[in-house]
Every structure is written in structure tokens, then in C-alpha cells.
Image (cartoon, rainbow, N blue to C red; front, top):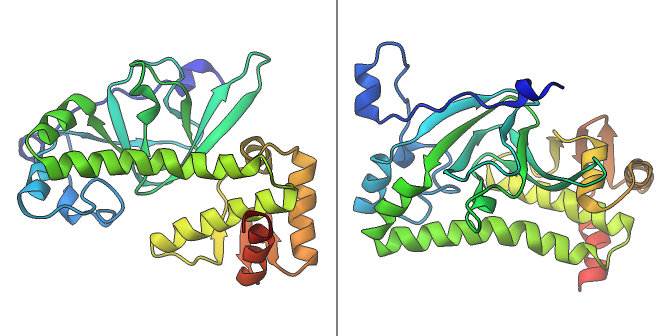
Length: 260
């Protein structure tokens, strides 16, 4: 893929009032307070005036096509991105040209937090399917949070949640065998699907087997072999990227045998 194809489209910042005056731009149909992801995203835990503050937040809505980058490693940090729909992968470029997948993000989760420390993104984020994001200027969000202790707490908690989710899983992987790693990964996806109102036992994996292997520290052949082993144990039914967990308790036991 050519580098030019990965360059993100320019962001245009807008408020609801601005959109209403701009004929060339469709107005936002939802605000933070009415978004279907409010219990997972920034409004989570907020009430009253703090939610109204978020409704005044200036942000851009943008669609990202499958395979396109939202941002690249080394890009200047300016925005926190809230995923409205679709799935992204975060990855690092290794010196030998390979990529190391560091996480997968879905609707209601945040991207871009890796840029907070140095002012530059430490990884790249690429859409695994057609997706939509809200790009929130971090400076503006900080200004709003300065006037609300509750909003500051929620922002800190959400940032911590995104970091802990990835690190807690990665910390466990060091002592797991292949079956335990894949079981942990699938249970993690299952729990996140359930939190979004989807089936926790039947879903479509947007990432490839190679990307799963990169994330879990497993070779492609090992990932495929482990999926086959789970099918043979009647824990899963797999049709390409479509997964149905037929024995959730059994899959959970495959994970818990090492972490208990």
C-alpha cells in the first residue's frame, strides 16, 4: 500500500451551532449525552452540568476506511480519538520492518493516549474495517476538565482503563502457553462484546490470524493450530473469521487453570 493512501483526511472542527449554519456539512445527529456509547465513553459516570459541558465539546467526526491510518507513529499528539464504530489496531514498527500489534480498539474505546507522555504518538492506529471516530482536541478537553473535578476524575479513569486493559492482558501472557493465550484473548473480546450489547458467544473477528499472533506473541501456524485444537475440544466453532463459543465455561477454564 502506498504511503499516500494512509494519510488521514484533514480534520474540521465543529460545534453543533456551527454545523447548523454550514450547508455543506451534515449536522451531528448525536451529542455526548445522547450517544449510544455514553456508558462506555467520556460521559460515563457524569450527570447534570458536567454532561452539558461535554455537549459543548468541540470535536470532529470522521470516517476512516478499512486499511487507512488514523495516525502514524511519530505524529504530533493533538487529539484523543473516541471510536464510534468499527475496529482499529495499534501497532509499532520494528527495526527489521515487521510490525508488533499492541492492541485492538472497538466502539466506545479511546485511541491516541500513547501521545500524552512525549507529545508524539508512540504507535500507529489503522482501521480494520470501515470505522467512524470522534477526534477530540486534548487542549479543549483539558480546559473543560479544569472547571470540573468530576470530569477530571472520569477522564483520568477512562485513560487508566484503556492502559490497564491492554497491560493486564499482556502481563499474563508471559506465563501462558498457546491455548491459555488464545483463550484469554477470546474471553477478552467476549466480555467487550457483551458490554456493548452484542452476543458474548458469537462474533466476527476483524483482525487476521497473523495480527492475533503478533499481539499474543505466537506464530501464525500456532494460532491456526490452537483454533483447530479448540474446535476439536468443542469449545469453539470457527468459520474463517466468524467465531461461535460453544462452551464458554470450558474456554474460561482453559484460561483460569494458569491464573488462579
